[in-house]
Amino acid sequence: MKIREPQRRNLLRLMAAGGVALCAPAMWGCKEQQQPAGTSEKPPAGVSEKPPAAATPAPPSGSGKLSQAEAQYQSTPKAGQKCSQCMHFIADSGSCKLVEGQISPEGWCKLFAAKAA
View 1 (cartoon, rainbow, N blue to C red):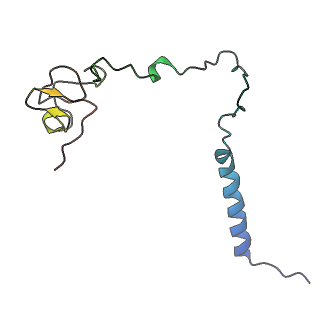
View 2 (cartoon, rainbow, N blue to C red):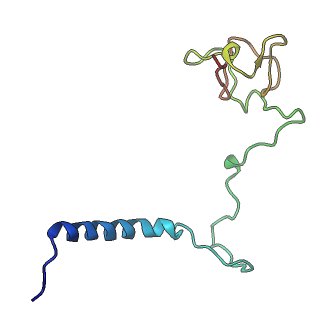
View 3 (cartoon, one colour):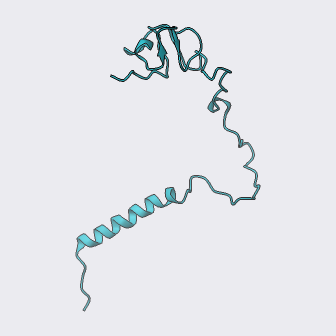
């Protein structure tokens, strides 16, 4: 005579199997097919191997700082944030550690990082 397992146990097994089935493609990298080292298979026609130009960051200038355009600098505050409250702002010279040129204490850029309290 066969002993019947409780329904709860069957439900837990089913849930575990379903979870593995859902996670397996992500665990084995099914998003992109990996090629073994040394193979030189070309991508399908119309597919570029290089990322789009917009995704590639512009090279930094000689000073190592971003241009004001790259930092999206503006001379007015944004959402209550302004350069005078930023840890990168140098008040004595009206400049920034990360952005080129003269910086207004009332300005703002995407690199804003509040000073430690």
